[in-house]
Image (cartoon, rainbow, N blue to C red):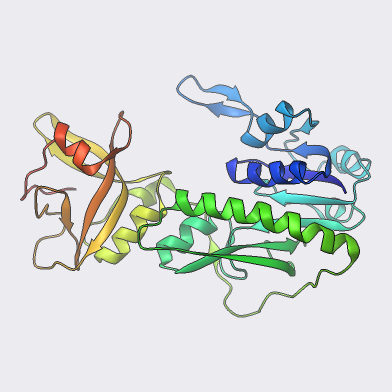
Length: 309
């Protein structure tokens, strides 16, 4: 098929790579404009932009797909369909109607649960045990279109957003490659989303990332894993040189009670919460790389009785 591809982050790259491998003609890849990255704030292309350019695929990075000239340019591509994966813009009706077969979005949740920007993180934070990815025909509403295909992924007690992200990206790539021939042949069944069970995955805000040890331990554990690796849930560790910010990147719940929230209960980073405790398994001191807790403790002992803020 002649396809346009619209996507921006790493999650989208796996899908684009699978489409290329499957032999589809990617007429053009759309992505968000290059953005400042790193300490030098140098303008760098998105992961999709870089991948497409490396493979000789034409790339466009319009600031808005609502501009009439951009709408006309997209329509002039004459593609059979478009695949959209975390593009980062709301598309107008004129764009949605500009392909022969339609525009199809891969969304990382089991719709109508977790429509919106951060479905993977919100699913883990909420304690969902199962999530997935779905192929959805795009409509003007936010993630409201009918679903054509679904793949499910389980969320385990030690899963982080990063790990679930990678499994969902692989599932999305496989799912779209299997679904496109059904769409082209007119055999894909479109199922309207249920009216009940709608939730929205709001964008993760920086202020959410600080750990509140007064919350129940299961909630703290889910937050740590749901925000790992980015932006990373964090706390303040007292040291002889003052407080140091430390990110908690992996944890496990332990059924221990009776200590003030934030109190370290042993020499291996078991931390009391409002109810229960969490054992920190992977951490990252500010300005340093991520480390397993036992490696971190070799360079920074944290005694039982220390209070984390």
